[in-house]
Amino acid sequence: MENFPHTYYVYGISLHSGIPLSLPVRGYGGLAEIDLRMAPASFFSDAIAGVSLEQASGSWYQIGRLADGSSYMRWEHVGEFLISGDGRRMSCRQFDRATCESFEVYMLGQALSYALVGQAFEPIHATVVVVNGEAVVFLGDSGFGKSTLAASFISAGYQLLTDDLLILRETHGRLFAYPGPPRIKLFPRTARRFLGTAADGIPMNRDTQKLILPLDRRRSCSLPVSVKAIFALASPREVFRRQPVRLKPLSPREAFLELVKNTFNYRITDGARLQRQFTEASRLVRLMPIRKLSIPRNFSELPSAREAILAELKPQQLEALAWLFQVMGEEAVMLNLKTELYLGLDAMGTRMWLLLTESPSIQLAYDSLLEEYDVEPARLERELNEFIDKLLEQSLIELGPGELSTSGMPR
Image 1 (tube, rainbow, N blue to C red):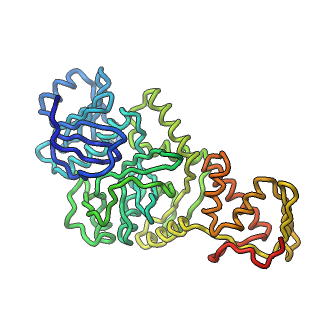
Image 2 (image 1 turned 90 degrees about the horizontal axis):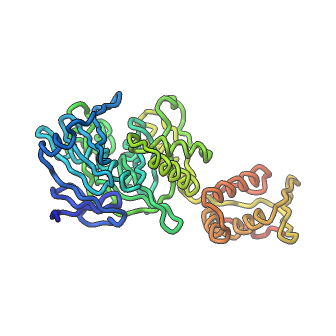
Image 3 (image 1 turned 60 degrees about the horizontal axis):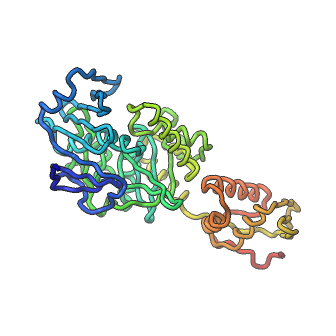
């Protein structure tokens, strides 16, 4: 049995390595195990003998699928990798002209994604920051501004959880995001603007100015974190330079398409994988609503985007206006005493109203409803928001900063 002197923890997995890596040696690795070893050039040339290698348009790496289900990939001037079909073993070779930092980025990104898919995980193309102990997820393709937005959060004192590759897992009804390598990839101008330096960065490869920037423990989080919100970044082509920052809830269908579109590994397309990918996306949509975030391509707009996101994360509170509320069995009627508009409530609506008026925030009312009713979290959030919107339209409530109060109102 091969001996691996190092064990690291990344994306919730235990990585047993024959070489030292810039990864945490403490953390959570209970999701899976992967063995990583170095191999000579002859090992790879023998493995891919007679294998047809492909290179997708616009891509600068070659891939090949072997008869035993293994996957081979090669980045010019960086390195080559062979991933076993079950995702439990990775063999790698760093090319002479590659830096260790560049080699690790490709090994722990695209190459590792083949191992993750082989072990039935669905890696997502996303960058995640930690706000008040909870994960805020930014979905988006390369060039959409995920890392730049995360850098804006880091500059404001928040931590990075992962940059580019994300693993999400549900545990006891809660969605958890798992930490990636403690580094972020930024262009020099962005690094200087938000991190104060680009001097410590190493180029990703010889054909780009993008830098790999290590993050210390103050700026990165190495533990799994429950997910608070997911935002899908709009394509730069969809956003006008002078338009304001916009947030829009996505329908379940739109959210599903965003998740499928932002898979990290789109090269493995066998039937079993596609079915698992669609099932996972459907499950995530039921667990967590997704909002579309449109940000103009301008550094000066990033503080506004950050504040809009933070405001979206804060628990909103309701202030009731002058109204009459009459319970009739399990149902109720509400009457605005000023406008004389009224609203009939069914049993669910009545319970929603009672919890909203008794709770200090909408979030706590939502949590109570989730405990009482057998309903998917995303559906409950959608129905509660629709109920609140109806109350606002009828001028029966208004959103405000104070505690939810009904003192002095007739019941």
